[in-house]
Amino acid sequence: MLSEFLDTSDEWITTRTGIKTRHILTDERFEDLATEASARAIEAAGLCPDDIDYIICSNVSNYYVTPHLASIIQGGLGIKGPNCPTMDINVACVGFVYGLDICDALLATGRAHNILLVAAEECTRFCDWTDRNCSVLFGDGAGAVVLTQGDNLLARHMTSTPMRDVIVYRNPMEPTPFETGEGIDTHHALEMKGREVFRMAVTSASRDISQVVADAGLTFDDIDYFLLHQANLRINEAIRENLKQPEEKFPTNVQRFGNTSSAAIPLLLDEGVREGRIKRGDLLLMSAFGAGFVTGTAIVRY
Ligand code: ACO
Image (cartoon, rainbow, N blue to C red; front, side, top):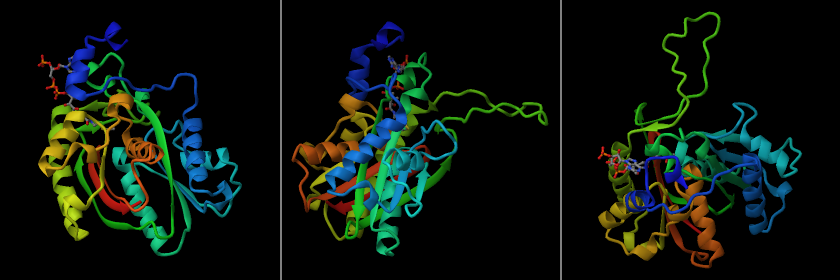
């Protein structure tokens, strides 16, 4: 389908990225996808929406700068408030792991008891669909979890290194009557230096995973599953080879969903749990990289 309007081929996309299909929102609403994922997570936790006392939403895709998506989801779930604070975080693809870190702090201090953490992305809206470098990589998706007392992280490592130009997407901007317009870039499509991101992703994930596992007093063999950001199968394969761990400990779904940014890890988690592969008590290591350049790695016992 893509090769009908782009100078690309199924063979190129498959061998360079591993991606075979991706899901693209058409007439559905992005916020409905986010709300549905949230409702399913609350149901899976055996709770009802009114039990939720904090909502954190990771996304870079909300149609509104304000109101934030977490409050729209709150409305969609029928939670009237006002005693359920909501907020969005934008840490690009690492939002879910940064979100876990924030939830960990809220739970540890007793300021929240049942937190809905949702990641929802409509990446395909950022693409210039005439640019084969980016548009073949992305898909849309949403995933959510409920975290409760006791769901604390065993170890985590979050990083941020200012690199403005490796992955860039600009907010729409028009000059005001007080400016000449000089210096305002009105280009509205995602741009990235793919090869550079590839190298940084493999190096930083291999480093961060080793550190977090050591911080938790564990070895790689103790980890049941490595849930890595799903950007490119070759990136994950290179990380796996560095860690010298078996393939079955690295579930993937980039083949079917493409890169869904911060939704990728909760989608993997959800599939693993619903298919019965991930079981209560398993040690899960989650690791992601993304625009910033940021990385986040955490270990949680499911
Ligand atoms: N179809 C056909 N040819 C293509 C395509 C395409 N879709 N895209 C690029 N090419 C061509 C290039 O033009 C280049 O041609 P040339 O050799 O004549 O110059 C050739 O293929 C090789 O290009 P490379 O960039 O070297 O290909 P590479 O193997 O590095 O794969 C890719 C490119 C897939 C982008 C890879 O670098 C990658 O996955 N990088 C990481 C991207 C990423 O993770 N981004 C994160 C985004 S942020 C977030 O997650 C939200």
